[in-house]
Image (cartoon, rainbow over all chains, first blue to last red; front, side, top):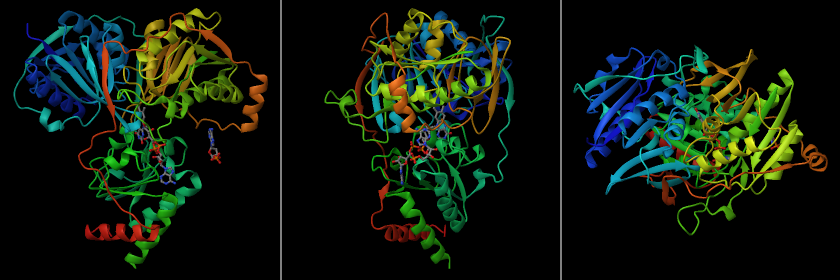
Amino acid sequence: MAASIWVVVEQWQGQITDISFEALALGREVADTSKATLEAVLPGHQCAALAEQLGCADSVLCADHPALAEPVPETHAAALAELARQRQPRAILIPVTNTAMGVSTLLGALLDAPAVNFAIDLKATDGTLEARCVLYGGKVETRVRFSKQPAIIGLWPGARPADQGRSDRKPAVEQVQVSLPSEARVRLKRYIEPEAGEVDLTREDILVAVGRGIQSKDNMELAEELARALGGELCGSRPVVDQGWLPLSRQIGKSGLTVKPKLYLALGISGAPEHVEGMKNSGLIVAVNTDPQAPIFNVAHYGVVADALELVPALTEAVRARKG
Amino acid sequence: MNLLVLMRMVPDVVEELEIAPDGKSLDREALRLIASESDDHALEEALLLKERYGGKVTVVVPDAPEVGDLLYTAAAKGADRVIRLRGIKTGLGVAALARSCAAALQATPGLLPVNLILTGTQAIEDLDGLVAPLVAHHLGLPYIGVVTAVTEIADGKASVVKEFQAGYRGEFQIALPAVLGVQSAEKPPRYVPVAKVRAAMKSVKIEECEVPQPTPAALEGIEVLAMSKPEVAGRAAMLEGSPEEVAGKLCDLLAERGLL
Ligand SMILES: Cc1cc2nc3c(=O)[nH]c(=O)nc-3n(C[C@H](O)[C@H](O)[C@H](O)COP(=O)(O)OP(=O)(O)OC[C@H]3O[C@@H](n4cnc5c(N)ncnc54)[C@H](O)[C@@H]3O)c2cc1C
Ligand SMILES: Nc1ncnc2c1ncn2[C@@H]1O[C@H](COP(=O)(O)O)[C@@H](O)[C@H]1O
């Protein structure tokens, strides 16, 4: 039997997530270069209809069980481990999302297999798999090789364009049974809707984003004035929201919003992957940071190595002067 | 309520990170270590739970330079016991680290059983796994990560809130004892004045525990080939000058794009 590469497909509110298609696109490349088959694994309950969208893969394994309707990492890991023991895939790609947090790690532990987090690329060379992973808040890249199978790869968003993983082809779909404990130790009680923000930040053309570099609640006023002068809205990174300086409805990134304004002005934001995920497709990204090595300069179009507290008032004034 | 907080020192990424001469690791001599951010939130959540339900908070940290600061600060914030685990290597190798921590918890009299183990949901150097699910696995406990609140503890179960995406969250029920990967505490981690930390240095005793098996230095089934600064396609064009000059240049850029 040919070796297979698995991509674990994630659903959110009944839809397959973009990152799953990104993972399929990457999985397709790796399968093709290593003469393996690509299998999409779709854990869930009564979601076989979604399998039709997974034609990028050669085949789809629908692992159906009522318990898999809940996004409980240990339940999903147990189901995946059972299937992997039966079918021995060579590699398992799993999207790194908050929902799936812990699935790849638990799967590695259950299978006694190597599992990496934060991969942005994967390739097969001479029969071995090599991954590129991003560590230290985006400051360091690590290349690793797997010496044991199955290799479990937690994949960051953005490895490949999602559209590359979409296909009209109809894949072969196989329904498989999994046996899970009748009593789960972790249960989802309810979903909590997002806090309604006063504005819809995803529709704004200009966003002024503040990070921990703003240093204090009092300094927020500086950024607010700039946003007002520019006719934009204020948003920020997680630490600023955690401090209570901005509401959760204004957090950009993995747990927060994904935005695509015409201008994203990042003030004192380091550019950790969890933040970048939410703003990298903005039209024009300008970053201000005191650290010339800050990863935000790897995604920004324009950068300024400066103290935001000095630059922002000057910029506010210049903007006001231009606008008259 | 018996609460155990597992914390860890990691490199401060606000500082410059140097790659070691072997090209495969960080130059740890040049690093400044700080408590992993979400571990700090795990400690805060534990202290908030102690305030709500009573009980005891024990902080356990693998040995590392500067670990005393972390432990005395934790004690000054309200931790009842602070423990340093000797014989554990931190750095890359989360799978081995978590196994050693789990073994040390089991081998140290009086640490287990607990009601909850809290640790950060993820750390910046978690290449080969995450501590919370691994410790849960080794101790046979249930796990949930990305936790931002513990809403209720009753009848041997905890209700916790976990973040999903786009502002969506979910409330989960988890059987106790359990391991939580904490993303952020319900309040920002409390500030503790230096004087209180100094006082803790005089009055608090850091307990020491040996891990039963020394942590292997190597990753398991994974070979690090190289570490480097990220390769990027297009780095930002840098603007230079005084704040006024840079402000002027930025205004030009915005005006060209019809954004002013
Ligand atoms: C599961 C998970 C989900 C997450 N979700 C999100 C999310 O949705 N959104 C999010 O943002 N983060 C998220 N994070 C957190 C993320 O990993 C980072 O910790 C966070 O983005 C860092 O925010 P920051 O850049 O503001 O702070 P830091 O990383 O601390 O960066 C502060 C920056 O400010 C610079 N600076 C300091 N002083 C000044 C000054 N005076 N002027 C200019 N620059 C200055 C520093 O050089 C530094 O680069 C998540 C993490 C996890 C584990
Ligand atoms: N170690 C800390 N933990 C939590 N909050 C802190 C800490 N240090 C400083 N702060 C907060 O940050 C603010 C500014 O601190 P400082 O830079 O020390 O003046 C203080 O008002 C505190 O609320």
